[in-house]
Structure formats: structure tokens, C-alpha cells
Image (cartoon, rainbow, N blue to C red; front, side):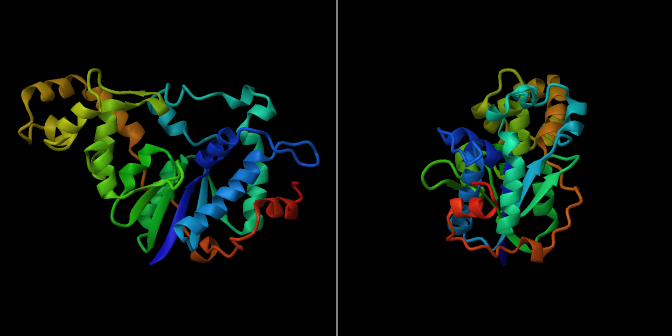
Length: 279
């Protein structure tokens, strides 16, 4: 089975922008640290994950529009980079990153109208002929984990792989319970408040009795105290599910020949930038 690596593009961009402490200037005086780091990161992932297919998916300015319609404060805690100077704005380096990916013959997609998460989730759902590894530090992706889909969190020296067993070990719930779990506890990264008084330990305990739907329908032997808590928070849970659950119905035709990795994985990132005229 072919191995397709799906990279959360903005997630990698931010890790390079904020993770490389000092600027790297080219001959024009432009800081290219994120571009160099992105190229280096992609090459390392190809080698580390032994990938033969790869797709980098980026968000667009329209990506969160449908979820904003559901909850206006969705991701309202994020920095408004449109008001930041260029040297403090990671997005100013995106055109150069696109140029580098094109030179490396690494496929990328800008998710217009949907979040990159939704696009990646739809690929996982609709293209079962691949073994897939999703590269991101975003814990929302754990809802997609199964025997064919693995998450790779590249933090640390060697990174961490999340299989179904690793997801359960970390959260005490299974991947197919992650949406319910995060609906209960909320998600501070996306500015989604959870149910007051329910943290990770209590959420895992509640879900040991079944899904939220079954508990609220009284189709389980869940204690009455939990039922009452969920019943009074039903509207919050319904809203959170709509915000947290990734879409699987985004049209995302994948052409295998475009995904194939053909670049020299042993080339130096600076050589790539030089070939693109960016040094």
C-alpha cells in the first residue's frame, strides 16, 4: 500500500517561524528562515517517514467562514497578522514556500472555503487505497486515527506517532470518541469553551458509559448526575460538535501521479533556495 504523508501546512510554517530563533537573511536582506526551515522540514519528513507520496495542505482566508457562522468567537483568540509588520508575519513567506515546493515537485493545495483539517479528513475518508500519516501538532487530528491513519507529532528529537493505542494511552478515550471528548472539555487553542466543571478525567469517565448521543438519549447506564449535567449543557455540546468534528465530504480528487515524491531527498535546503533564486 502506498504511503501518503499529509502535512498541515500552516502548522509547519508556524513551527518554523517561531522555532528558529534568529533570522536568516538572503542577498536582498529578506528573512528567509521559515522558507529554509520549511524545505528542511519537508526533506526530513520524507526520510523519517519513508514516504513515497506527499501533499501539503494550507488554509486560506475563507477557511473558517462556515464555523464562524456557527460560533462567532471561533479562533477569535488568534493573532490578527494583517496588522503585523512583515518581519513579524509568518504568512509573508508563503509565496516563497510555494515556490520552493514547486521546485521540489512536492504537491500542495490551498483549502478554499474549508479548513485544511477538513480537506485532510476528507482525503483520509475518501481515498482508502493509501496508508496515511498526518503531520501536525494539532490534537484535533486524533479523531481521524485508525489502523490505516497515523498522526506524527514532530515535536521533540524523534517526534511522536499516534496510533489508536497511543491515542487511548494519552486521552483515555478511543479515536472515535475524540469529538465527544473535546466537545465536553472544549479547545482553548480554537477558543471553544467546554462544559463548566468537566475536565479531561471527568470527560473520559463520562464517555466510558457510551457516546454523548446515547447518554442523552438514556440508552446507557450512565449515572443520573452525569446525564443531568449533559442535559443542561446540550446546546453547548451540539455547538462544540459542529466546530470540532472535521468534515469528510469536501471534494478532494487526488491524482496519484501528482503526489509521487521525485525530488532528491539528500539535497541541502540552501541549495534549493539558491535554485529558486531566493538566497
